[in-house]
Length: 256
Image (cartoon, rainbow, N blue to C red; front, side, top):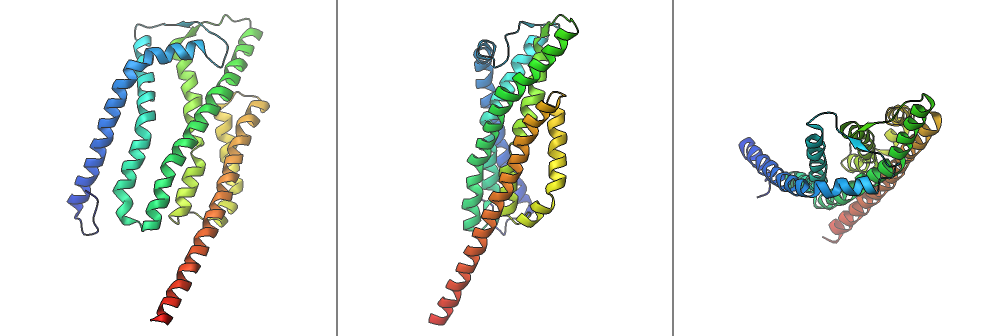
């Protein structure tokens, strides 16, 4: 059942509860599948790691279980995210025009694509670079590298997840532009502050050397510029469409 304009507050809450329960059910199913797939997934990561091969050790009886559950959680979220976005669209669609409904629906696969691109970039480029940097420092200090599995995956998640979310920038900017909260002029005026924020983010999730910072900051800044270009293109299309609709309305009135 979709939300109707005359629906009461209780009806809205009931509809929201229905959507949340559906998302929770998919999350539970995804978690179940993740628990079954986690051992094989861990094996693939260990054999085909983009970084150098390491021996995973456990320093606590709970380390193995913690990583097992973490991998299952990540796999479940990958399945749940598109479905949750679709449920969000179902919840708000009746408050949008038909043209806005179609446009908003297109952002679901686009946002998933952006997330997967960020995940691939973070895992195959930034994570190996970060691990190699720390290994080089350890070698220079004549330290013996003994990796705990919890510390290894914690280090990986701290790099991969923030950068994957940062790659959602084009989808977020386009969506906010589509609903009128952003416009190309505002994006242009915010450019210097956005650059500063992206440089800070790149410094937080990359090794502390200028080359690594640039390898992360440049793609993020490129994503911002791409977002601004796409927003300008979308804004121009909306203006042309509105002008075309106005002309059709005037012609219709004249004929009438």
